[in-house]
Image 1 (spheres, rainbow, N blue to C red):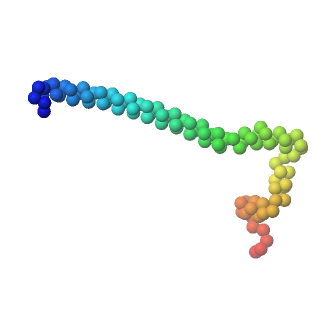
Image 2: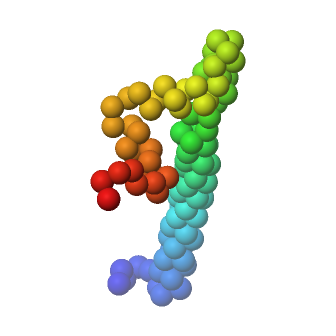
Image 3: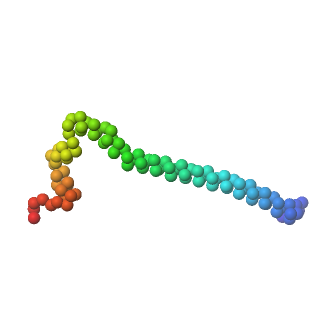
Length: 101
C-alpha cells in the first residue's frame, strides 16, 4: 500500500479501473456477438447457394435445351442406361436385382 494514499482513494481507483475494464469487455463482447450473427447468416446463404445451385442450373440452363431438342428426362435416362455400369447402379438403387439368382 502506498503511504500517501488512504484506503478510500485506493478503493476508488480500483473501482474506476474495474469500470473501465467492464466497458472495454462489453464492447469486445458486442463485436463478437455481431460477428457471430453475420457469420451465421453468411453460412445460411452459402449453404442455400450450394444446395440450390444445381436446381437453378437444371431449370434455367439444361431444361430449355431438353425441351428445344424435343428430349425429356425419360430420353435422358434411357441415354444414361447406355453408360457402362449405370444400369446396374440404377437397379441396385431401386432395389431391383437382375439375374444371377
